[in-house]
Length: 422
Image 1: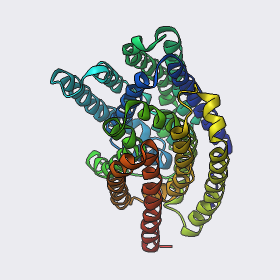
Image 2 (image 1 turned 60 degrees about the vertical axis):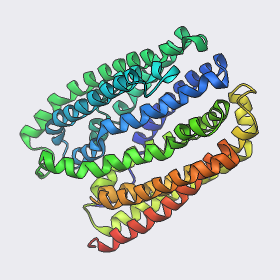
Image 3 (image 1 turned 180 degrees about the vertical axis):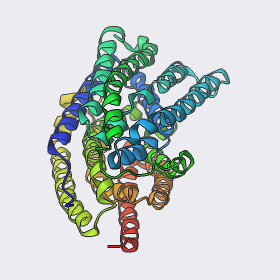
Image 4 (image 1 turned 180 degrees about the horizontal axis):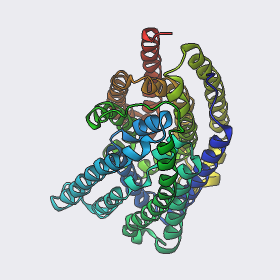
């Protein structure tokens, strides 16, 4: 069977959904920057970065593994959903408890003490979104739709209830309500699909049956994937957290607005790989020449396009920041941050192909070792460069670390490729 690029229809749906999500999210952030000073806005960026870390810990790497197994054998969705959601709920409960303990013990204070524990409650709702099920089944509209509803509810809440910086404590409650609404929609969609899957499984209409790995085997393989995902988030958001203690609060906001623009484009890359991953998972167990052709075509499209886009945004950075934000947020530091951060995007496009193929080939541990090295390099670079250059030093650190990580991931992929039988 010839390995083809995944459906452009699926990618269009994902990009449309993710674009809508990011647009709604960006408008919410834009409203906050219009209603807050740089100093008031800074803890919002830190709290959201912490929430991203926690959400990836809750995932435990199971969505990537689950999507791969469902793509190869759709009826496995019925067997996987309960253990995956159960394990994620236990993890979310532990993290939410730790957040409240941290506030009670005085480990976090001020505005962060108001934000983080309530934000942590939303972790208990995240497992019910089950995007990995829809991803594996190729139902990309249902990967996107709950997220669109979530961001729409969040924007509505911000517009109505967070009218100035004094009402910042309402933000996490709005997030909890938004995630709850999205989870309810996802569960309704999943329940409609379960009957069809049971019927298909009963008549054996989906190819040759494959044995589902045991729960312990799934966890062993998911662990490096989950840690790798966490390390990715750590690299993307570590600078935001470290800058809180390295520079003045307004400088955190300067980095934050540039980082927001970069992360909108990063979301496009993520959706591209969300669409590609099921196809890679199937191609990884097929003939090597077919997998090679798939990778070459995909690399040319994604990496070339990302590089052209990054160059254009680097040139237009002053205009873009002045257009999107108040003059207070569009200054020399934020412009330099954006010009550096935007070139992380083509690196992510290139590295993502090597990374996702390694995961599809079951080489998650090898990919994890590379991720650990890149994260340690970034952690070493940020303090020295941020103290010397301010917020833009943190942006330069991320660019250097991702370039090194991309080269290392390419080497790891080459090693795994040579070991793989044709």
